[in-house]
Length: 469
Image 1 (cartoon, rainbow, N blue to C red):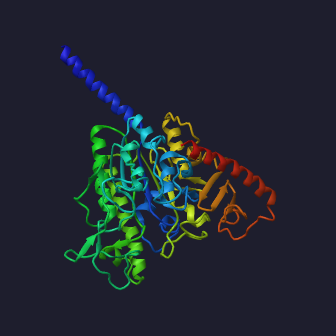
Image 2: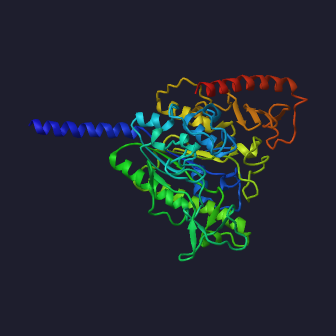
Image 3: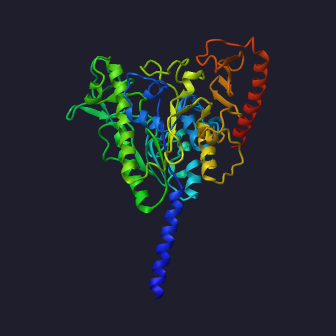
C-alpha cells in the first residue's frame, strides 16, 4: 500500500512538473553572421531564396527597425547574452576581450528557471582552448587570459567554433583555387576525393575537447545536426529548452555546393556562392522548424531571428536602401533583418517600425518569464514585449552605440551620429529620411545639443562600468 502511494505520488509530481514546464515556452535564438537587411525575402529581396525564413516571419512579428548593438560581430553577441552595451565589458571589436564570468547572462537566468541550455555555432566571445592556436586566437599566448567557453556562462552544453569558418566543409580549404575563387571570399565546394587542406580551426564541444565527426557538407547542417538532438533530449526529459544558434553564414569565406549554386544560374560566381550559402542555411532553419512541428513543440516555442551586423564590404550582400555596411554606424551597418514568432501568444503577419535591438533580448525575456535579474551594473536594453504585442509603438529609452571613433544616439525618431570621435556631429530624421541623406544639424541644432548631452551622460556611465570591471 505504501509502495503504491509512493508510486502515485511520484506520478502526480511528474505530471505537475510537466504541467509547469508546459507553461514555459521553449526559446530558440537564431543569429546569422553579416546578413544584410536586404538579403531576405521578407524584407523584399526578389533574388535570394529564403522561403523558410519568409514563412516564419509571416507567422510572427517582423521588426523593420531592429538594431545590432554594434556594426561587428563579437560586441553584438555580448549584447544578446547580457542586455548591456558591449563596451561595458571591454568587448569593443571582433576578437577583442571576452565575456567576463561576472556578467549575468540570459542562459544563466534560464538555467535557474529550469531550462536546459545549449549553444551551437559561432561563439566569438572568448578563446576556446589554451593548448593550441585556434582560429584568430587561442593557445598559450597573450590570448590565454581570454579563455571563455559557453559552459562558463550558463550553457549546459555547446558545439561551437571561436570565429569564422567556411560555410561548407567548414574544417577544410582547397589545396588550390580555381578562377574566381579566393581564400578570403570563398570557393566552390570540392567534390569528394579532391585535394583539400585543414582550415586551421576546430569545433569544440567541451573543455579542450575538439570534435572530429560529422563535419562535412553545409556548415548550417553540421550545426543543425547538433541542435535537433538537443531539442529531442529536452523533450524526452520534459524540460523547456533554450537553444542559441549562431550560424556563420554568410560571413566570408562563402562556400557553396553545386546544388545551391545551380539555383542561381546566370549570376556571377560570387553571387552564386553568397546567395547559395544563404539558401543552404534557410534549408536548415526549415528543417529545424519542421522537427519542432513533428514533436508538437512549434506552437509553444519562441523563435527570435536577427543578424549580428550589416553585410560585409565588397560582397553581393544588401543593406537594402540603407546607408553603408558592416563597420559603420549608419543604418546599413547596424539595422538588420529580424523577427519573432510565437504561435501560442502572438498573432502573425505584423510588422512594426519601433526601434528595437539586440540589447533588448535579455530584459524582454526577463519580463515575459518573470525572471529575477540582479546585477550591479546597468542594463542598456528594455523589455520590448509591449511593443511586440502591439500595446506600445514609441520607444522611450534611446539606444547608444560606440565603435572605434564612431558614436551615435538613436531615439524613436532621430539619430545623432559622429564618425570622427565627436569633433563633428550629424542628425537625421529617420522617420522621414531613413536613408540618412539630409543632415539636419543646422535646422535641428537645439535637438542635437540635447541628444549630445544625453549621449555624453550615457557614455560616461559606460566607461565607469568598464573601470569597475
